[in-house]
Structures are given as structure tokens and as C-alpha cells.
Amino acid sequence: MPVELGNVQAIVTHVFRRPIGRHLIFRFEEREGARSFIRQLWSGITTADARLEESPDPLLAVGITCNGLRALGVDAALLGKFDAIYKAGPDGQVLGDVAGSRGDPATWWEGCFKTEDVHCIVHAYVRSDEAAEAATLMIRDLSREARLTELTPRQNGAVLETHSLGGGKLHFGYTDGISQPDIRWDDAPDAPAQLNFRRFLLGYSTPEHSSAPSEGAAADLVRGSAYGMFRWIHQDVATFNRFLAEEGPRLFRDLAPADAGELLAAKLLGRWRDGTPLVLSPDHPDPALAASNDFGYVPQDADGRRCPFSSHIRVVNPRDTPLDPAVVDGVPRVLRRGMPYGPPLDSEADDGADRGLVGIFLCADLRLQIYTLARWIKRNSFSPVYNANRRTQDALVGNRALPGASTDFRVPGQDGTAGVVNLPDFMYTKGTAFLLYPSKATLAELSRSPDIGRFEGQR
Image (tube, rainbow, N blue to C red; front, side, top):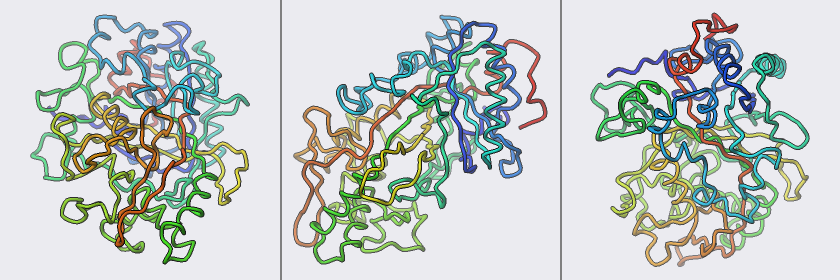
């Protein structure tokens, strides 16, 4: 069955390379108003067949929670066929957001509303501040006409806005967007490195690549859609910078302090901050390798001397690392769409500003893909390479408050194994929602009207 790219939201198939993003969160108050809102947005949603570089602002995407589908009037029998994790909503314990820690779900959205109140999120990506204001005004006008309630996730009432730092950089200085899955969006024979589109799109379920809804009217309803996790993450840049400055020279005494800090940053991630994989260049960044994604661990770094086992990229994509058969059959992959928010910080002193990352992680199976990776991050127990201690965490993004977790980070070297004890938390969660990114056909059915709205003519 071929995929109609004109039916798929472009956020599923493409990275939106616009420097500004705004994320507006809404609760539906009445069914007809909610349907009207979706109807008015319909033709403005950017689809996968669009020429993004030529498309006018804004590039638009919309995600809807299970509570949002209920509010739209989707039949309960159909909803019963959907992914159980999507229906339940995010479980902070599984995701590593431990009660009592800074990422406690009770504190999400800065306490302004509850996660179950979220019915939809509209994402607008633009080239300028002026375009951002215009897109926001249009979306808010539609929401007021449809009698929606906008949920403001900041106590100061500000919109949740992401903004490029330039050069594809994130707040910790790493280059983002290098290791995206290579996907074949049709049923032609897959190249060895390509993934089947059924790992990311719903409504095409097979025994080999299953997803829910798997068949019948519910599968017909969602065909061309994808599930997604919207994740608002604070990054503690001052703590990160102090950690590099203090621990780098202690671990790598033969290097100049600045170089030692850079090497420690690379060990935490698994790549140098320009993107060079440690496996391919363990001693220095190499511009010729900065975008490289063609490497494995077993033949090149089986003992973790170049890239430590608990480095972030080795945890979330262990590549050819042997897995415990009881854990999962193969490495789960997700599509990552993210952009930083907040002002940059070069200092080791905290300036009190909120900064971090807003990420959207897309897949067809939330349990297999999202929850599996979350479990691996909070406890590295998925492979025999971790040997005796399978309570270590992802060195960069783990939540150290998890009961029983080891907070040590071991760094094998020429003269034995050095390491860090009591790793600090470098980030914490400020909000999470599980969304369906409906296809255009799904959105049309949800709106149940031939009137497709005021964005007519846009892609």
C-alpha cells in the first residue's frame, strides 16, 4: 500500500529549518467549536509533499491528545483500538520523571494546568519575529472563534517559543540533527540501512511492523498519521559548564584544562561538540567526520575506550551492540524534531533564565519506541556490555533521583578506568504530552465538514 505524502504532516517526514517555532496549547471546550478549529486549520497544515524551502510562513503542524479526540467526539469503540500508552497519557515514572525531583510531573507546565487538560498543540515555524506574531495572532483568532481555551504553560504568561542558536547548536554546545533514521516511504525493497515507514506511520500495520489501531475502521481513520511525544526540557547549562571545568582536568590530566573539558563533553555525548563521533576520532574533532553516521561499536570500540557505554548516543542508539533478547528485538528508533529555547549561556554562574529544548519524538508504537528508550536512559540494563552494574544511567540525560540508580560514569582509558561519582542532573522535564499527528484525511474526518477553512491555498 503506497504512502500518499500529500496526506502526511510534513513534521513527520522533514526537519523544519525555520529559526523560530511557537507551540500553542489548547483545551477544547465544546465539540462543534473544536471541530470548527480543526476545519479552519486543515488546509494550512504543511504536508510532506511541500517544497519547504519555498513555502511561505508559517509551516504548521498539529497534534491532538486522546482527551482531545474524545472532546472532538471520536467514537469510544474506535478510541479503544488506539495505542494503550497514547490513551493513558505520559507516565512520569516510566519516563524517568521521578516524583519529588525537579522533573516531577506534579510540577509540569509550571503548575499552570494539568497534562490531562491538554487537547491539542499547534506548532508554527517561521523565519522572523514578525511572522511569528502574525501566525500566533491567526491561530489565536481561530481559537477564540471556536471557543477554545489557550493553556499558557508559563507563569509569566509568555508563549512557549523556540529559537535557533545558529549552526544547529543546542545549549550544551552540541550539534543537533545528525543521526536521523533513513526511511523508505514506500514498499519498494528496502536498502539495508533504510527503515520501513511502518515504524513511524499508522494505518499500514503488518505482522512484522505492527501498530495500533491495526485494522478496521480505526486503522482507516488514522492512516498516514503518527504518534508523538511532546517534551519540554530545561537544561542546566551553568551546572554543565562547571562540571566540565572541574571534572575534565581531573580526569584528563595530560590535557590543557579547556581541552580536557571538551573531551569530557564528548565522552558524555559520544560525539565531539561539532558532531565528530568518538568511535571514529577519539582524540580530537575532525571536520571531515562531523556529520558522519556510518559507524558501529562492536568492531571499532567493543570495550568502550573511545565512546563510553553510558554515553548518550550509545544508550539511545546502540547500533550493533548485542542486546538482551528478552529486552527488545532490535534497536527502537524515533524521529526527532527539536529546537532550543531561552538565551545562550557561556558562564559557570547561573543567570536564572529558563533555557533548554522543546522536542517532538515521532513513532508508530509508543511502548516499543518511546518507553523502551526511556527505560534504557534511566537504567542501562539492555545489554551484556554493562556486565555487573546495570544500574548506570545515560550520562547526559538521566535523572539521578531514580531510586537505586548508580550515578557513576566510568571512562575507560589507556591507564585503566577513571570516572565520576555522583553525576549531577543536567536537565529536567517541564512538560510532556502524547499526541496523534493526524493525516490530512484524518483531520478532515475529525472536522466532519466540507468547509476547509481560511488557510485555503497554503501548503
